[in-house]
Length: 252
Image (tube, rainbow, N blue to C red; front, side, top):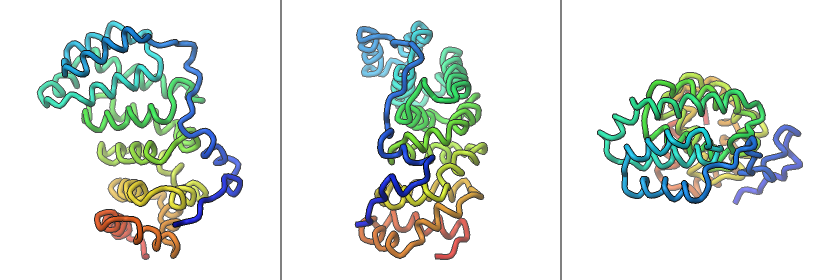
């Protein structure tokens, strides 16, 4: 097993990783919609009632805090009927949800509205829902918060966000992946995360052909890390990492 890095060995900018991961920011004074309305939302979610869910969002969006916003997106992700999803993408209520969320993320320099896990939920939901008007703007707003995200994130959340960028083929990805490719961040990731999470991020780098990839792949291309990956990753994980190296033309 790879030895864990002490937070004290990281740069000052990265020392919040171990203590702040997943921490909940203050929600800008909004208490949210309350338990009764949460149960109403769950009813629409369980029944797969896309129309009812959208109407619920429209009625209550002014009272949403960050958690409400993220759970609304997560509920929409659960709609499996492709015809319903197609209609949702064009609904004014949903497009308003996308616009408001984008503005909230972009305008809040300290990201008081959402925590990193909630951003991960939204990114994963956006991947399932698919590209629509406002997708690029939403991820541009997330990119603006890249440094904050990597300082408050856990492994699964960061891997989910990276995967969303790649699956949706977001062109404005430079800031997000540059934050991951910081030398200390890259080393922290490969020495502390599991093989699947490392492979998912490597795959995202490769699919988007991210230029600023040197530090992340240099951190992987270490004898101890390679030994760890070979011993703990399945054949698909190893193949995905190897493919990422090959696509980016990195010697290993």
